[in-house]
Length: 250
Image (cartoon, rainbow, N blue to C red; front, side, top):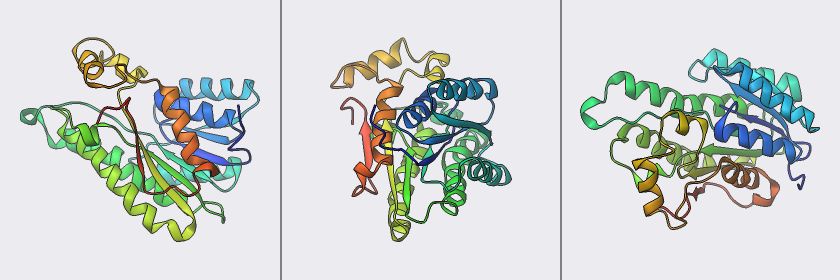
């Protein structure tokens, strides 16, 4: 594999499993030193770090609940302590629970916005203070739902539309510091979370495959490949974009 990220330091949030783990593994394979952030799954994060290290990569697992400002500070500080200045931030941590309008509660709303939106802002705010002088890249993992807006997902879809908007705003705000900001908007991916929710089979998957031009759901590695490109110098003239990796579903 090419070493497009050789010498770079990357912080990947929510990286113990699913898309985040695939991104962390891909970044390490491309030469980056990777801080693998987790909030609950310490054993899984440690296993991922062991796998990366066994293949000659550099990685460290760092705990941090991104809805807590003090934990965000320590997460970034621990990353810098381990590897030095940060070059790449991947805002991947997020949750999704579906709810029709009649069952939406304040708790459901805040649970999603506190992590998917506020958490992303807090980590970005803290990380850019420690970015290398030459700039770098932020990649926000958004979702295809921000445009195809499935029924019963008002709150989750609203958080991802917010991520798209924040991506656009920060791309302008951070451009003077040579920090590029882009979003990757995945379609349905067969991650542990999707499988645990039972969405990888049955009506939801059948509907997605029926309306997706490529007629299948995606793989975490396909999201990781695009994220690695956007984080690399090959994407040096790309900022403020939302790249839909959805098999053509819009």
